[in-house]
Image (cartoon, rainbow, N blue to C red; front, side):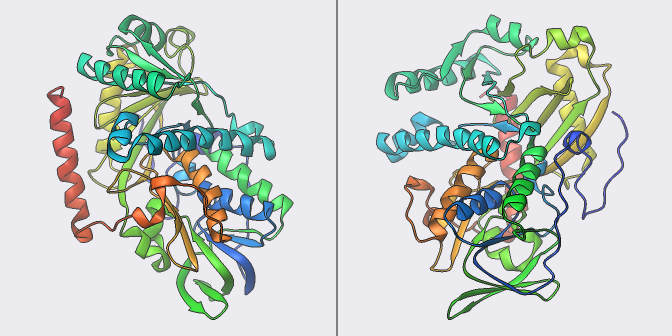
Length: 439
């Protein structure tokens, strides 16, 4: 693999998104005391979507990002705009009832629509949002039967027109790989340039509502006042607000003010590699429809084509986010599925953290009369974070959107949180064993 320079802890790893970003913005630190209706802590998809909705409803707001816009997961993810949760739809119906499953499916579909809406509102052509569809590829016949059964449930029970069952030959023809045993196509999903998307939201919001977006402004403390809450910045400035939205997700441990949310989230590392540009023959043979693709192992990996390159990502839990071992394992998996890429160099590699929850579901809502949270996207955050940001704004303004079982009251702290690193490693080891056995 090509050698990479390890970045400093305060800078994101060099990624394909950084190399191809053209939606940039320069936002100031907050250098004066200010007062707003709602303060938003976190300048990712959730926070910026919330700020957009707040502005639409006439509320003043300040978005307070501890690092730079796009520094966290919103600028590091794979750019897959999905309409899914970690739990399968039949599993949700069995566990929570058919009405709940129907409502969650509606939310998931609306989440993709909401991304498209924001792209259109701010004219984010450089975000390159496309409804390409997403193909889930079965890693063995047992997995194929399972996802086909789930897809048929969506078709028959929810009358869902967006899913299509594919057999082995069709998946091989489209992907250019013989590693899979069929799959399911979800036509409603899409792809996006994630860093251009988050930068575009921030610049669009700031151009329409100057003095809204602040970066390099970590919040170090929160305390109640009679009229609301006071946020103290690391620079000693104060923000007074009637309500706050905390939208820091897996990076809630960056500042003392959001550490309470951190205790309900497991930061699970996700790594990505991107090849050099493929040859014309490879371009023609691999991923012909340029969708997003994923597979069905518990330690799931995914792939897509961007900028003439194949990008390949997956989850891991060992070492920090710059660990060479995680990139090496991804490269080996990529070559196993696409042997013709064995001589292709890796041009970019980067990683970040996914916010996982105990119940495998995201959550949004008021946790008291002065704070709303939105967090826990479990690896499917581009669309859902954007949607839950909108719901968070409604909650902050005293409304009660129907979020079903995604309500924040269901978000539970992680037991024995200080041991969560050991717990993650144990779970990952168990999952990898099951995957190796084909179960």
